[in-house]
Amino acid sequence: MAHVGVAARETGGGALSRLRLVIVLGSLVAVAPLATDLNLPSFPGVARDFGTSVSSVQLTLTGFFAGLGLGQLLAGPVSDVLGRRRPLLVGVGAYVAVSLACAAAPSIYALAALRLLQGAAGATGIVIAFAVVRDLYAGAEAARLLSQLLLVVGVAPVVAPIFGAGLLELMAWRGLFVVLAALGVLTLAGVAVWLPETWPEARRRRGGLRELGATLGLLGRDREFVAYVLANALSGGAMYAYIAGSPFVLQDVYGVSPAEYAAVFGVNSAGLVALGQLNGLLVGRVPLLRLLRTGVVLAAAGGAALLAVVLGHAGLAALLPCLFAVVASVGLVLPNANALALHDHPEVAGAASALLGTSRFAVGAAVAPLVGLAGRGSAVPMGIAIAALTACGAASLALRAKSPHPAGR
Image 1 (tube, rainbow, N blue to C red):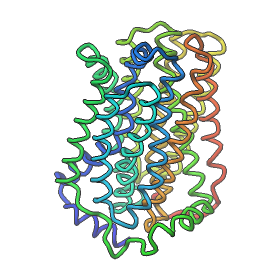
Image 2 (spheres, rainbow, N blue to C red):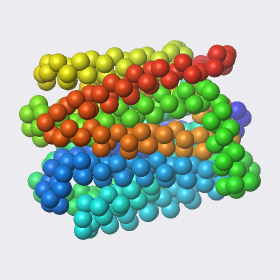
Image 3 (cartoon, rainbow, N blue to C red):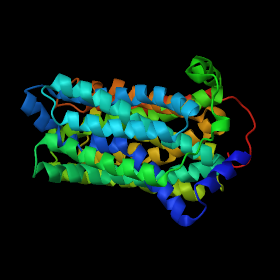
């Protein structure tokens, strides 16, 4: 683990450098919540503008999630070969360009295709950000940094729907993509100025991308890695089912206003941030696996209760705590699942991070259109999806091999 300390010193050891690292990496991993949540209030307007259905608008979200998954699968291994910095600069620059193209989309199908490309470009930042964390830190310290990133990521869902709703008072939905492009420019500047190369040339993969298949096979045979990937992916899938379904379920089925919807979304996101920060305080004192298990059990309990509520037509007051539990649990699942999965694979952190991200967004892409199958008048598809995903997420940890762990894990 000597390279961890060396790499950390290369970024600067002070509190200011640590803060800059959190800001830059947080901006990179915030691509997904910003590019989805900022646009959520605009979904009904997009449907009206293009004269299309709810499910068709949700396909733009599916396209974005699919792009995020495919892009990570490419960008992660590329960064193991070429280093972290160059692919980051190219990927974030492409994200800015495609975001501007989304603003000029002539049809819902063109928008869905462009959103796929937008996701693929934005994926570069997400996957490499997690690889950078593993370049610099391991174990409990990596989980602590990931919890700090959750603070940045968690603020985006709190602010983005409110910000998006406010912007829609000033501009059409197309203007939101211009705003995303402007935020991408700021992120690009942050990478250029504050983030040095963290993956030294001496440690890079020498076999080029031809090694990708062998590397993925090696990771796929690691039962512990697969268990953590599944826990992460299924938790993420439940979160994206909530993101895709909640605008219509809460506003059309339960009758909340756009402002009230934004408030609910913000409270749930604040719960995610709170548990993420609590997780950061507990790592090093409580084993990461115990924290992860707590997260998946909380999610499964919330998912089961949610399904019972929607099937029993129990009302909004019963629904909201269930949604809160599902969303807040991500604050425990994401940092610990990622830290545990990456711990034993420092030499292929890019590829390992790619599998973590790709699986998460692949599940999200598959689930997003399903939650609207019953139309705007039913919450049952969302309830079934969230309950099934969270239950499977809790069960996935049974795949772990019974092997001893170093202290702190």
